[in-house]
Structure formats: C-alpha cells, structure tokens
Length: 426
Image (cartoon, rainbow, N blue to C red; front, side):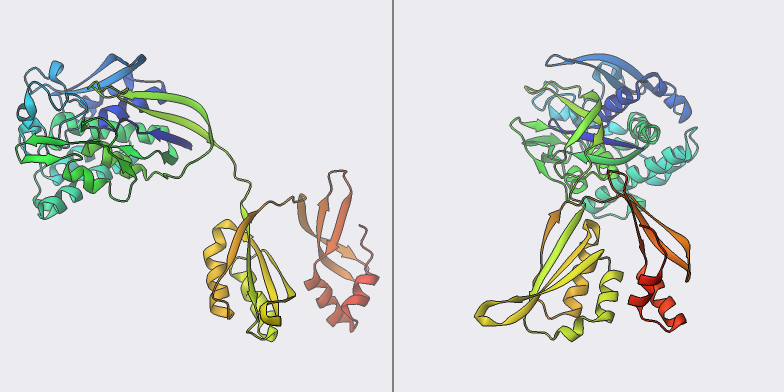
C-alpha cells in the first residue's frame, strides 16, 4: 500500500494525473492498449515529450479519432468535463467558442452520440481491466454525474454526458482508474488546489472559473484562484481528486519518488502537477493527556463503576489528585492518559458522568518498555504476570492484581498476604 502527496499548484486534469501516475509506476506503455481493452477503436493514446519551464516530462495524450485534427488539437487540460482544459489558453485564438467542445454539457465535445451514465457503465463493465479498476471508474463517473445532475436540476438517469461521454474522456477516466488500482494507494495528502480565475465563454454562455460542475466537485476542499487568469482544474481532475479523498493537513514526509504530470497549456508558472510517493513521518504524540478540575461533585461518584467505564471508553490510565481551587474550595484534578484517536469517546464519557463543563488536553510523549503477558506457575497456583525488560536487560515481573484478588478469595487470605507469599522472581 502506498502513500502519495499531490501538489496542485497549477490545478489538475485527467491528462495531468495520467502522466504523473504513469511516471510513478515507471510505465507509460501500459496505457497504449487501453482503447482496445475498452472496445473503443476510435480512441488512441500517444506519449509525447513536454518541457514546462525547464521541467522535462512526458505527456499522455488521449485522442478521439472521430474528431478531425484531434492529434494536434488534443484536449488540453484534458478533461472534457467541461472542457477548456489546460490545453488551450482562455484567450486563445479559437476563442472559447470554438471551444465549444468545451463546457459542461454544451458542446459537441462528445464526439459521437451523447451517452447516458448507463451507457458508460456498460462500456466499463465490458472492458478488459481489473475488477477494482472498474469499481474506481464507476465511482468517478458517478461523482461527475451527480455534480452535473445537481447543477442542471435533472435526474441522474436522464443526464446526457456530452463532453465526458466522448471516447477520449472515457479512456482518460478509465485510464486513471487503472493506474490508481496498480499504484495500490492507501493514503493521499494534497496541497490546496489552484483553480485559476476569470470568465470563460461556452455554449451555455459566459461562465465563471471554476466551472459549475467543477466547483460542485470541489466542495469541502481548500482552493485558491492563484495569480493567473484561466481555467486550471477540470471536472475530471476534480472528480479524480475527490475519489482519492485526500487529507489537506500539512504533513512532514520523506519523498521516495517524484513525478510530474504536465498540462498542455503553457502558463507563466510551470503547468504541472507534482505527485510524490512518500514515507510518512511517524508522529510521536500519539497519546494525549486529558484533564479537568472538579469542585462541585462528590468523589464518591468516581468510584469503581466510574473508573471501569472510563477505561472502557478508551482511557489507558488515569489519576485523581486533590487540589485547592479558587475561593478556597477543595476540589480534585482528574487526569486521563489516552490514545489520540479516543479523544472524542473519552471526553463524551467525562461530560456525561461528571459535573465538568470543560476539558483541556495536550500531547504527551511516553517512553515504554517492551512488555509481554503470560501465565506462570507459583506456589499458590497459576497467575498471569506482566514481564518487562529494561534497556540494561533487567527483567521486571509483576502479577496481575485480578489474579491476586482471585487467590485471596480462594485461600481466605488478604491480597497483601498473597503477594508476599508468591514465589515470583523479578
């Protein structure tokens, strides 16, 4: 399982992902047979050389042979989601009119009959690709379909996929699904996404950047316009990113391999996405200490039942210390050590079972000795012991108190007498 880090400082598109993922896998040729595997003989994939501000990389071009001159015109940023891809600029010569192959549902970017979602799903189901790649492709198309359905206020089943139903777009999205499957990605981190800004002309009229479907797919993600006008993220790029479900938190990591995926258009800044295979830095603060001071509750409510419930809620250990509080009131400090991922469970338990109305917590470091637990025969019977070893190889053995209590009941002695009679070496 691999962890990747995406740097989307110049946006994202399907082609950009295809190029970067292929480089990470060290294999571009694996995509060349994809049109045949999808039973789409009118599609073609070419691997081109690209130079983006001195960054030399390869560009995966997906072509629809039904479109005259597609080899040269290609689909820029890639997408076909709504089209104006990173390929041509937004002030381009063929204005965004010609780019009618461009926006959302508008254009004739489909290169053939408009397809419904069910039509695309059949193509995916009949493809000669892995079962998991089919699942990924289905999910990405469904995300785009739901976004389009919401924007146009139409049932998902009746939506005609114009641009993304084209041969090139289907190959583009399914190709990414195949590569994602082969990379076996388990975790994804990402920077905030640069979208570009401005207005683009489409058959729907003048629309803002990011386009409506793209904006819908980016909901909940950190984005920013950047300093260059134009469209930098396409619906396909946004949908693939949403499928990857990235974590946008800043993360310390060690890069293992880095790949660049170029967009076709040239911006002032390097028009590439950078994706790295990374090794995550292990966090030291995996445990936290949770505290609350209480002066309006009887300590009798913090007896065995409360303590057992506290441990069951996720706490590892706890202590209760008496303290003098403001206005001369006596109270006590309840301190709990717990794994970071149990914060919600333990805090909810404390709010429900004590009078506190506020908690404080902070990360802690722990030095722990390696330990094991096993059964050991003693002169009084079998008991469970915990064995630890110090850095200087000194062994410490401690019997579990539950077994001490059991032996005390069985022999009619006190736990203190039992512990003194056990022949356990430590």
